[in-house]
Image (tube, rainbow, N blue to C red; front, side, top):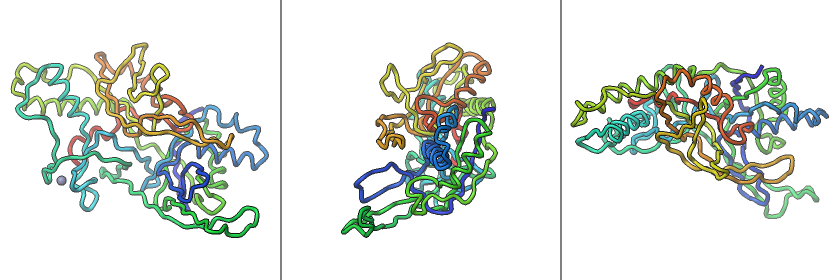
Length: 386
Ligand SMILES: [Zn+2]
């Protein structure tokens, strides 16, 4: 049976995640591991066992998710939504020594948009966010976080650079004047991700990663794994997330309504249900064949356009190990992008379909981890600065 398996990796050595770039003297690293790299390790393992013919059958119907750095081996970290804001002067969660905190602005924006544009609310002052601690302006906050015992933590990413001497392949001695620098991630973080598919195959994936390592330069000692394990999902069921999202909206609606000049003419609470689709990994979708940043979805045969959305573009490349060539570059919407949908009817009718969307992902190349989404990102509930 197919299911979502949450997997945690503990690293023994630095890891470099990057595309192969010939003739480059500086090799940077990415901060997350795309699913294609995990899949590549499995292919390499099967080839080394003379089982190359099994590869295409093995990887069929498996979604190799992105693996994200986490400061806790048992918690799947989430990308903060694009709508998360922090104090411009003292960035970061309050758990950080000098952080003034982070909160999410989407629920207040939904209430404000609806009250102002749908119902004609009039407000005495423009709608802005300031830091409650120092009154400075708010700024976007990028990155991953985890929540443990009700406390939120940013994930810090430590890097290390090492200079290496290139070896001439013919003469097997140092190539004159050829130094190159590898930047890698220090093994201070764990990497946690999802592999969606047949549970029977997980053991082979574990064996592959333990033996082959992960990322680039594994023959030089990079990307070695000391432990790999399955962990419990730390995310609430969809229904709870949607209920909590709408309850929070009700509260904020009331607060914003109370400052409207014409509040007596306005509805006391929202008249529809709202839910968000949030991207956890870069997502490639098109509209009539053209890449777009706007996500439209179909639920129960009805097409929905986002009521509000906020997205960032990102370039998506890749390396085809089969062909030894770069993959076609395209662009997509980056992790953190958020899309708000509005439904007039009871949302419960849509839950099975939303579960499917979350399970299958959205757009192209979902088998490599692109298009990993979450319905009603739990961070949207954090409307009070934390
Ligand atoms: Zn502040």
